Image (cartoon, rainbow, N blue to C red; front, side):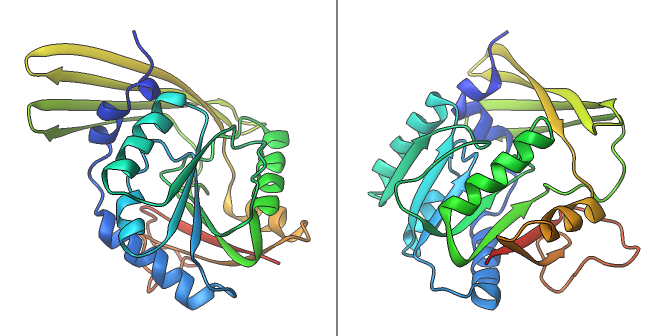
Length: 253
């Protein structure tokens, strides 16, 4: 078995179910409504293959991608080169990093906030605080759990040209006291008739809504702005609705 994150081409195909221009539209709506500073520089934390890079560059943003996997960053750099984007990349752990220059806006997508315990979660927000200008926003996609963690087994298939990728995601609540979920991500690939399998172990410390609000309130460097359902600013969370793909926004103060 080879690890998933060292195969960015297949990883990108696996998660190619998103409407990238529409998601960038939402990022810009959030910036327009809630940022207290103009935004020209953006940081994607856990950027992987940087799927939003080209669209952000087309709209005039300077992109920085941060990831711990060299193969992902090399792949993302090739995409930046292909569209002649103004981009830079940082090889670093999201739970402890420093940037040479602060940015105007930070975001993390698809639940990629991979803190494995409370200490790493605190260190992550310390790092983001150092990286983000005052008045700027931190946008988190699917990083707050709005339902108790349970055993999960999901799968889906995506096709790109002659490549078919079946993704299997499994997760189990391994430690309910520390809110640790363990699982795996498996890519079953068929590339021009050649079959390959890639697997990655996953460990994450989950965080729940009221805990998250208390966590932010206890800090002096972030302010809670809001959270919404399904990337839709007309659907604020706060009732009994079923939660799909929630987004959360904080402001650096």
